[in-house]
Length: 258
Image (cartoon, rainbow, N blue to C red; front, side, top):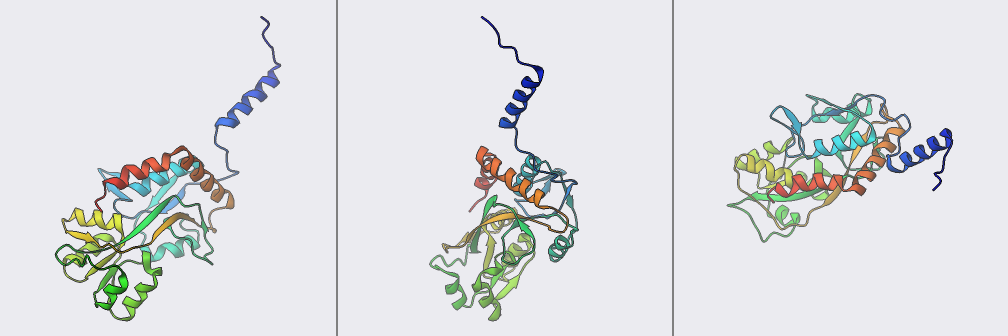
């Protein structure tokens, strides 16, 4: 039997072609420096445990950044109301769990998970017959929420009637409910359940149909490039196709009481 003999250049070309089939495509000049991301104690999405930064968002961003050829550095002590101005000025590079808004000058990536909102009441006062936030508004109940779901028109109705209390983090929201400073706690259902369990405050999720919004990474146009945006989108697409993002979501979300 005769063996085919190829010139060295031909064999090199065949090897390069094989590598292109199995290696992820490289984005042009993406992530030329570490990406600055504000740290937030937002359990179970992002927090410190045993001296290590962990959480659902932390793990998702870690694999997406690695797949895109990027490195992440977390910036501590960034007030929530400073994050958007800092992103616009190029002092931060990436914000997590963003909802695309028309006219926003920032870049938004492909969605990488869904955010599910829920409405909760204390277990001893829950009105399980309520089917809408409008019913709770008409009953003159006080709503406790953060600025995430503020785009819901009903939120502004609660505010106009003096039935709204804002909070900055979910631990504070649960504390307000515990102290009787609010009747209905509205927000990310997983984060609320986690915060309530941490301090043993019994809350019940009401059977009210709430939004389920896809969230994205929000990238600074000032400090990043379209190549960075493409690198993120390609990484998310490949990781979804391989099932890696779903495995991370499944590892964190089923453990959260609902």
